[in-house]
Picture 1 (cartoon, rainbow, N blue to C red):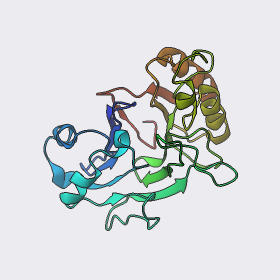
Picture 2 (cartoon, rainbow, N blue to C red; picture 1 turned 180 degrees about the vertical axis):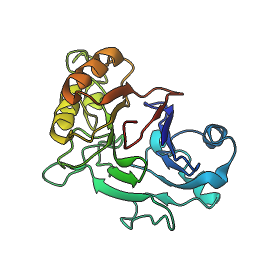
Picture 3 (cartoon, one colour; picture 1 turned 90 degrees about the vertical axis):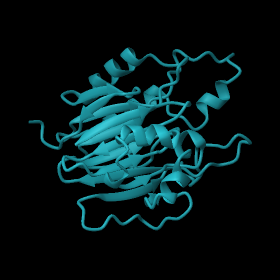
Length: 238
């Protein structure tokens, strides 16, 4: 299984999970459809489906384009009905990214709640993958996870409180310390890879974030998502 990052951040998010047989799942199609099609080598027939965490354009820009091409998009923020990918090894579950009171932590421009979901995606050669972004924390705990893709948007040691965007950055995004606590709570002997997502351009440090995560997860490999990053996400280490 390969993970290909087409974009990670406020300018647009999109990831491809590409199985050994070429089957591809699109995660958060938040880029122009031309960019996604180019990354697929213009071969749309290999796409088994797509998942989208929430309706903001930097995650959902090309949802309608994909649907117009006949590709099923799992959008739990519109319908909780799970997406069925028949006759394949893909299993996809969505879960609410809410606080302990049931309130969604990500917000819209007007400050209202933005329903946002994480995904647990399984495939035989990859194992169990968690994808989580655009939330302040994750109240759920998971077992037997092989791959974790999780937001580490900013560090409270870097961001300046006098920054006019301070509240916007902190609201509905995960701080490094929270990300590390999540990794500590969900790591296990089967964890192979951790990918840190959606780092803020001004309020993060990719090298520092990766080093801090590595201290927590031990033997697992740690990466920071960046455009054109391509890595293997296999269940078995060899």
